[in-house]
Image 1 (cartoon, rainbow, N blue to C red):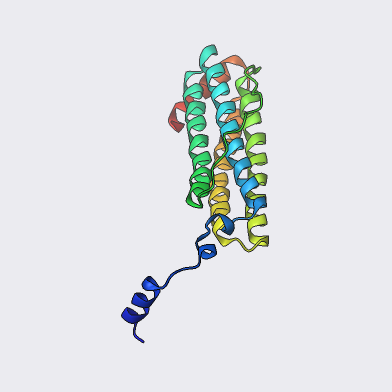
Image 2 (image 1 turned 90 degrees about the vertical axis):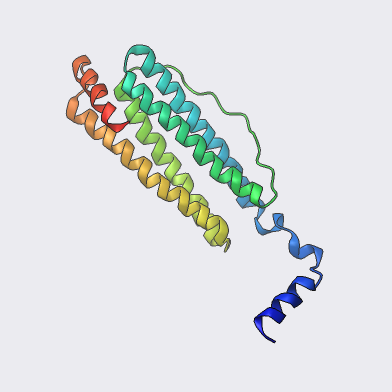
Length: 186
């Protein structure tokens, strides 16, 4: 049988209904982890939006713009898991987002909080990839790798900001100069 005959045979044969079940390709554990990923990326977006608004309100305009961009990027990351679940005909959940602090003490505090937050997100993304691998779910493992790759970039950005903070210092003039320097990151 040549290739054309094989394709013709496969396209004319009736496929049993259980073999077209796309939702059965993902375990409940993986689905829950992906629903969590959506929620936490949305939480991250809100957290960075709160930081952006606070920074803009007190006059760190470039930092405010940078954190607004970070907020928008987190929504893109949430979309990765949302689109993935939809590809398997699984309804992504729109969960409640826990309270996000809207009060901060300084630009320095925000930068340190950013690195701490991105370390936590990195651990979560590594866990998603690890669980997918343990379950033999190479499709979700691929998505987990995508998240992990994104986190390398996120950690780099957070560490760069922390390094700049350490170079400039945290007195008022130093922070104003740092905010001016942050314009180059936009």
